[in-house]
Amino acid sequence: MNNGPGYPRPETLTEVDLVWIEKRLQHWIRFGRPVRDDIRDRRRRTVAFRPGSVFAFVRWAANDYGTIRSRIDILRAIHPGEPCQTVPHVQPGGDLLLSVNGWPKVQSVLETIDAIEALDIDACDVAPEHWRHLNHSMRANIAPRAYTRLRHAAWLKRREIER
Image 1 (cartoon, helix red, strand yellow):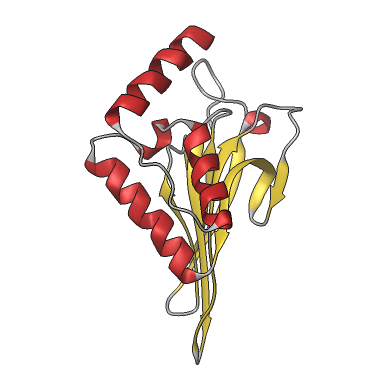
Image 2 (image 1 turned 90 degrees about the vertical axis):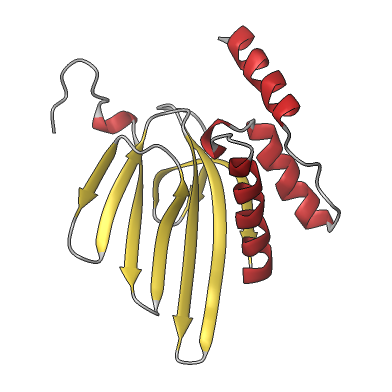
Protein backbone atom coordinates (compact mmCIF):
# COMPACT_ATOMS: atom_id res chain seq x y z
CA MET A 1 0.00 0.00 0.00
CA ASN A 2 1.27 3.46 -0.90
CA ASN A 3 1.69 5.71 2.16
CA GLY A 4 2.76 8.81 0.26
CA PRO A 5 0.95 12.15 0.39
CA GLY A 6 -2.82 11.79 0.53
CA TYR A 7 -2.74 8.20 1.78
CA PRO A 8 -3.69 7.52 5.40
CA ARG A 9 -1.22 5.75 7.66
CA PRO A 10 -2.49 2.23 8.49
CA GLU A 11 -2.28 2.87 12.25
CA THR A 12 -4.81 5.71 11.96
CA LEU A 13 -7.49 3.63 10.24
CA THR A 14 -10.41 1.69 11.68
CA GLU A 15 -10.56 -1.75 10.07
CA VAL A 16 -13.67 -3.89 9.70
CA ASP A 17 -13.56 -7.59 8.81
CA LEU A 18 -16.34 -8.62 6.40
CA VAL A 19 -17.49 -12.18 5.74
CA TRP A 20 -19.94 -13.75 3.31
CA ILE A 21 -20.83 -17.43 3.68
CA GLU A 22 -24.06 -17.88 1.77
CA LYS A 23 -27.09 -18.66 3.95
CA ARG A 24 -24.88 -18.91 7.07
CA LEU A 25 -22.90 -15.80 7.94
CA GLN A 26 -22.85 -12.28 6.51
CA HIS A 27 -20.99 -9.19 7.73
CA TRP A 28 -21.37 -6.18 5.47
CA ILE A 29 -21.16 -2.40 5.36
CA ARG A 30 -24.57 -0.80 4.74
CA PHE A 31 -23.07 2.67 4.27
CA GLY A 32 -19.69 4.25 4.66
CA ARG A 33 -16.73 5.48 2.66
CA PRO A 34 -13.87 3.02 3.03
CA VAL A 35 -10.45 4.25 1.99
CA ARG A 36 -9.10 0.73 1.64
CA ASP A 37 -10.63 -2.60 0.65
CA ASP A 38 -8.41 -5.67 1.01
CA ILE A 39 -9.81 -8.89 -0.45
CA ARG A 40 -8.38 -11.79 1.55
CA ASP A 41 -10.20 -14.60 -0.24
CA ARG A 42 -13.55 -15.16 -1.96
CA ARG A 43 -15.41 -15.02 1.37
CA ARG A 44 -13.44 -12.47 3.41
CA ARG A 45 -12.33 -8.87 3.03
CA THR A 46 -11.20 -6.07 5.28
CA VAL A 47 -12.25 -2.47 4.73
CA ALA A 48 -10.75 0.55 6.46
CA PHE A 49 -12.13 3.97 7.37
CA ARG A 50 -10.46 7.31 8.12
CA PRO A 51 -10.87 8.82 11.60
CA GLY A 52 -14.16 10.66 11.89
CA SER A 53 -15.88 8.56 9.19
CA VAL A 54 -19.33 7.21 10.02
CA PHE A 55 -20.36 3.76 8.79
CA ALA A 56 -22.99 1.08 9.39
CA PHE A 57 -21.83 -2.48 10.05
CA VAL A 58 -24.42 -5.26 9.75
CA ARG A 59 -23.94 -8.79 11.08
CA TRP A 60 -26.27 -11.69 10.38
CA ALA A 61 -25.97 -15.42 11.10
CA ALA A 62 -28.23 -18.41 10.53
CA ASN A 63 -28.32 -22.14 11.08
CA ASP A 64 -30.48 -24.89 9.58
CA TYR A 65 -33.54 -23.52 11.39
CA GLY A 66 -33.26 -19.85 10.40
CA THR A 67 -31.75 -16.59 11.64
CA ILE A 68 -29.93 -16.87 14.94
CA ARG A 69 -28.40 -13.39 15.10
CA SER A 70 -28.86 -10.04 13.41
CA ARG A 71 -27.32 -6.78 14.50
CA ILE A 72 -26.49 -3.35 13.12
CA ASP A 73 -23.94 -0.98 14.60
CA ILE A 74 -23.44 2.58 13.39
CA LEU A 75 -19.99 3.77 14.38
CA ARG A 76 -17.71 6.75 14.00
CA ALA A 77 -14.12 5.74 13.28
CA ILE A 78 -11.89 7.08 16.04
CA HIS A 79 -8.71 9.15 16.01
CA PRO A 80 -5.57 7.49 17.42
CA GLY A 81 -5.62 7.50 21.23
CA GLU A 82 -9.31 8.43 21.42
CA PRO A 83 -11.43 6.31 23.81
CA CYS A 84 -13.76 3.88 22.09
CA GLN A 85 -16.13 0.96 22.51
CA THR A 86 -15.01 -2.44 21.37
CA VAL A 87 -17.10 -4.08 18.66
CA PRO A 88 -16.41 -7.58 17.33
CA HIS A 89 -14.65 -7.52 13.94
CA VAL A 90 -13.83 -3.78 14.26
CA GLN A 91 -10.25 -2.77 15.07
CA PRO A 92 -9.47 -0.89 17.25
CA GLY A 93 -13.17 -0.17 17.95
CA GLY A 94 -15.23 2.95 17.45
CA ASP A 95 -17.55 5.58 18.83
CA LEU A 96 -20.77 3.54 18.96
CA LEU A 97 -23.64 5.77 17.82
CA LEU A 98 -26.29 3.07 17.46
CA SER A 99 -26.41 -0.63 18.25
CA VAL A 100 -29.51 -2.82 17.88
CA ASN A 101 -30.10 -6.56 17.91
CA GLY A 102 -32.89 -8.64 16.44
CA TRP A 103 -34.19 -8.63 12.89
CA PRO A 104 -37.28 -6.41 13.44
CA LYS A 105 -35.12 -3.64 14.95
CA VAL A 106 -32.35 -4.09 12.39
CA GLN A 107 -34.94 -3.89 9.62
CA SER A 108 -36.36 -0.70 11.16
CA VAL A 109 -32.90 0.91 11.14
CA LEU A 110 -32.33 -0.19 7.52
CA GLU A 111 -35.68 1.38 6.57
CA THR A 112 -34.67 4.59 8.35
CA ILE A 113 -31.41 4.64 6.37
CA ASP A 114 -33.40 4.11 3.14
CA ALA A 115 -35.72 7.02 4.06
CA ILE A 116 -32.75 9.33 4.70
CA GLU A 117 -31.15 8.34 1.40
CA ALA A 118 -34.48 8.94 -0.36
CA LEU A 119 -34.01 12.60 0.66
CA ASP A 120 -30.72 12.59 -1.32
CA ILE A 121 -28.75 12.70 1.94
CA ASP A 122 -25.77 10.38 2.23
CA ALA A 123 -26.19 8.42 5.48
CA CYS A 124 -22.45 8.96 6.14
CA ASP A 125 -23.14 12.68 6.49
CA VAL A 126 -26.08 12.44 8.92
CA ALA A 127 -25.60 14.18 12.27
CA PRO A 128 -24.13 11.64 14.73
CA GLU A 129 -26.68 12.87 17.29
CA HIS A 130 -29.47 11.58 15.06
CA TRP A 131 -28.08 8.04 15.20
CA ARG A 132 -27.81 8.33 19.00
CA HIS A 133 -31.38 9.67 19.14
CA LEU A 134 -32.61 6.74 17.03
CA ASN A 135 -30.74 4.30 19.29
CA HIS A 136 -32.27 5.74 22.48
CA SER A 137 -35.76 5.99 20.96
CA MET A 138 -35.67 2.34 19.93
CA ARG A 139 -34.51 1.28 23.40
CA ALA A 140 -37.31 3.33 25.01
CA ASN A 141 -39.81 1.94 22.47
CA ILE A 142 -40.91 5.41 21.33
CA ALA A 143 -41.16 6.85 17.84
CA PRO A 144 -37.99 8.72 16.82
CA ARG A 145 -37.96 12.15 15.18
CA ALA A 146 -37.56 11.97 11.43
CA TYR A 147 -34.31 13.23 9.93
CA THR A 148 -35.25 16.02 7.54
CA ARG A 149 -33.43 18.19 5.02
CA LEU A 150 -33.83 21.10 7.46
CA ARG A 151 -32.22 19.16 10.32
CA HIS A 152 -29.45 18.09 7.95
CA ALA A 153 -28.80 21.66 6.78
CA ALA A 154 -28.57 22.78 10.43
CA TRP A 155 -26.08 19.98 11.15
CA LEU A 156 -23.93 20.90 8.15
CA LYS A 157 -23.79 24.54 9.27
CA ARG A 158 -22.90 23.52 12.84
CA ARG A 159 -20.19 21.16 11.56
CA GLU A 160 -18.76 23.97 9.40
CA ILE A 161 -18.60 26.31 12.41
CA GLU A 162 -16.96 23.65 14.60
CA ARG A 163 -14.14 23.12 12.12
